[in-house]
Image (cartoon, rainbow, N blue to C red; front, side, top):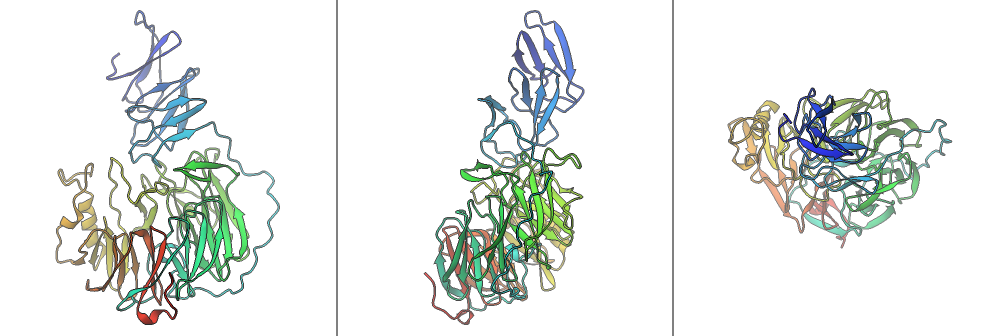
Length: 554
């Protein structure tokens, strides 16, 4: 063969020779194995790439090039591409493993995968909406009180629907630990807080309400699968999504279920990283706009697609519902849910995972999808100063504190407004400047290969060694910041073993040590106190002595 390092395989009495890495015009040759006579050749019209090719009697599997993680299914009878599997690529050394009527992909540390681990896939059924809509469910019940969140509350993940981590509250002075409460059930989400209560979700599917005053456990409500992101508060209601595929609304006073809506198109549970969840989990949490419209997305990967919906939180009325799966023809787009969702004005952002990227939807209809950013991985989505979305952090279902892959992700522009300046969180270190352009220089430098100055392909430079100029007003003394709360008069930094309060001028106001490692972005600041969730299942309250009026919890 003229192809370097080709993939040879036998089917029947013929020898097939497939180019390993080739242009779209390259041909797969069919050869008589005894004589070498060319019997046939055909082109698949895609760029070939590395990875092991594997075969069954009816098809073979390999990876197309172009830097995206996909698997090509080639029908041997028609010698044409049968289908793309967009969420996973064959491993470099073992390829796709066909066995027992299923396909298996072995673990690979590559950023072109949506999630990492061992995959098992079986033939799929179409994901179609019902031709005749089911009867409209009864309106959701009203809560005992419809008190709105206070201006200085933290009612959603990272404070608001856009995830800016900014709140109209002051930093507590001379803070210390006021109480701690261990919540049973394993790993907790970040906290939210409103109207004197703190809310957390858990991997056991339970949502818990605590008293902000003393940590007293007020109520708990359970679902059938994990709750990955914290509940949101709106007008006396606590709204959250569970990985059982259901959106829940409960009374903030007593946890009574006011209503729920199943967004998963069917009841089918699968094993994702040792957790039994719906094939369409609400793993990205929920956001609400100022009118009380709640947005949620049920999905995991592009293989099964995603159902995105908007409902009125007051009565549970469905405003719109859109299904983006491999069966959708207009537009032909399928994606998953791999991060927290964000709402910016009339645009809803869903991280569909690699290779799709972050999808932007019209928040008024759920239609008009566009890919706003490609190759963005990680469970933490932010909006850059220009409104473009980025993702960073660990995988949503990876159960690890950091993302570990052989290709390093770029540093996005996660900037936060503080008084008349901006604070950037770059690789765990804080930088403060008066304008975004100054911070861009830091980000650009971190995205350069420290050896060549070109595109980052190896280990990034040490962020603590970044040179600083006079335009940088101050920089953090460590690189272990994993969450922020930006107040009106300063910033609270959640670090690996402590919480710090910093003035706009960079002065360290106070430090409170943590008894265990915190949950990433496990921070909620209100007018009265700062609440932190720890990985060992504890919730802490930090504040001044006058912030609460009760005895510490236990």
